[in-house]
Amino acid sequence: MESTSTTQGFCGTIGNTPLIRLDTLSDATGCEILGKAEFLNPGGSVKDRAALAIIEDAERAGALRPGGVVVEGTAGNTGIGLALVANAKGYRSIIVVPETQSPEKFELLRAIGAEVRAVAPAPYSEPGNYNHVARRIAEETPGGFWANQFDNVANRNMHYRTTGPEIWAQTGGRVTAFVAAVGTGGTLAGVSRYLKEKNAAVRTVCADPFGASMWSWIKKGNLDDDEGDSVTEGIGQGRITKNFEGAPIDDAYRIGDEVILELNHYLVKREGLLLGSSSAINVCGALKLARERGPGQVIVTVLCDGGGRYLSRLYNPAWLAEKKLTPKGLSLDELLARL
Ligand code: PMP
Picture 1 (tube, rainbow, N blue to C red):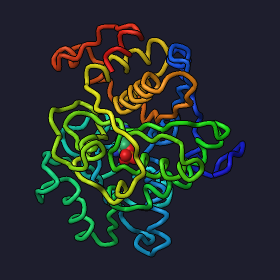
Picture 2 (picture 1 turned 45 degrees about the horizontal axis):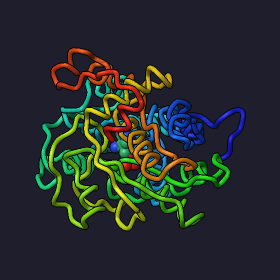
Picture 3 (picture 1 turned 90 degrees about the horizontal axis):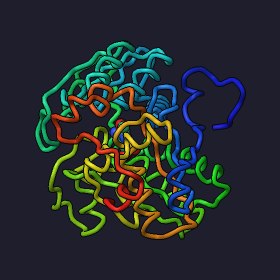
């Protein structure tokens, strides 16, 4: 997508996000630590890209026709992106969200006119899982189209076509590493494939929360080690999605909630960036990579969504205290030592 002074509607505003140099982190590590500002997309998250790609792919394939209904199961951000793209293109949307997700995301979805169905959390293996509920609703709704973000590779192809090339251009081809957490895996898989095609030496790393299996998959070749739990939202995958399948990933880090929350609060106070927890785990991964591989790296990561979506949680002292995750205000040295 080309940058112009005016954009074509909502959809034309998706992508071409700035790459922000995180100054204090870069100066302290001797690396360039750069955050792709996906929270500046018009729907407020990295998922706007997948939403646009999935809907336009379905239009081309004839799976979504005028008067159609976009249906999806989502932790929230994909639903917000899909509902807004649907509005801009004249479709309705039905969004199925596990009731554990932040109240702000539910309010946003309702405010933008999505029909929201909250469901009790259930593992993927059970019919009550939000993805299966969404598929069934799409099948039963006249004109229904199931977006299927986890296994619809229009998602990773969009990152291969847009996010990857933007990062390559914005770093003048100097990028040496890319780090991201996995939800659907579309971002990490699509960007990694593109960057490695441009330069096979680019190091690609997954930053995984506890309770997910991607770390286990990349380090041990199985999905068995998913110990622990995490308050992060939008990430934490337990299976190999079609989007993640075959992704060229070199390494994985498992990062705990305490250090993620510390970093969220550090990023607000020291970098002026109010972000969600997946952005913070990504920056933790970038910092760990900087520490491991030493100065001189150009490390790109993703700032997935803004912290306004999590005011009642990540930035609410009572919630933090209840979860025993109140940040201690650690210095950068102390933070680095805990990664
Ligand atoms: N962060 C947030 C806040 C998200 O909503 C998502 C998508 N579920 C991700 C990260 C992960 O992106 P992807 O689906 O491309 O792996």
